[in-house]
Image 1 (tube, rainbow, N blue to C red):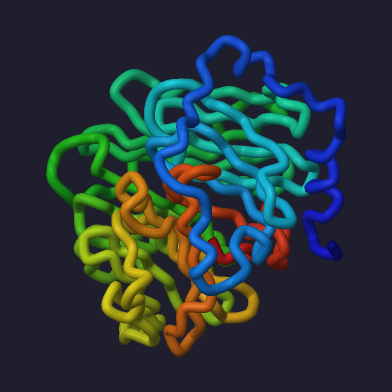
Image 2 (image 1 turned 120 degrees about the horizontal axis):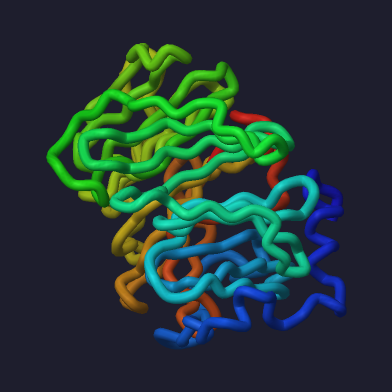
Length: 326
């Protein structure tokens, strides 16, 4: 394979991995095919194009796809929703599940588990080095920025972030990222803004976006944002001018339903994920900088909705903020 996570991916191919982990054994498998197998007329190479981790709201199964096949799954049980996920360089998988988060090994052992406090939700999680993680807890009018040390068991930071938007916890915030510069990039879904804060939570950059779902600080210094209401992707320069935009009209016959997060690949292409409305549209599209669709996945027999993917062949160490453009 020859990529950063090559050794990590190999761990998931061990024939001794149990079919069900300890937590999985206590639940009913939630995955039920919602439609047909892959449409062979779609551009690209189907699931062979990218090795990836794949998750989606409404389908509580984590998929690891390699060489076009699902080689490993993990069922998380009833309840919403899988929003964010990382394969780490040691092979562990860190993910958020709205009301809880966990880190599991390739052989499905749970090495860390966190249950959100009552009346809070978590929609984003990010590794910071080997031992620390960052996440945001949605709480009505009071989003919490939390930095936790798994090694020491200590919460190093728990601070109330500025808030814009209507009341309610679920729609408050979505994707949150610590950037390579150590700043904080926050999507206020109901507030209609993407805001960058410094380490003291002072606003240093922002743009108005109708319903921002995910924001990524790219290696070129621009910020890539997926917008849920208009189902578009917009790349902003530091001066807030638009460098690039992708709309559903650009996708033509490959238009998506229920778009969520996006990924900028090392080759400059962009992947957009979508819930797909229970089989009505594709789950993934990949477009070139000139907006040509080079890959589309509509496979409702083997996969569920797509909220987020981690493309495993791309460069970047997941534990280093800013190295993975997702």
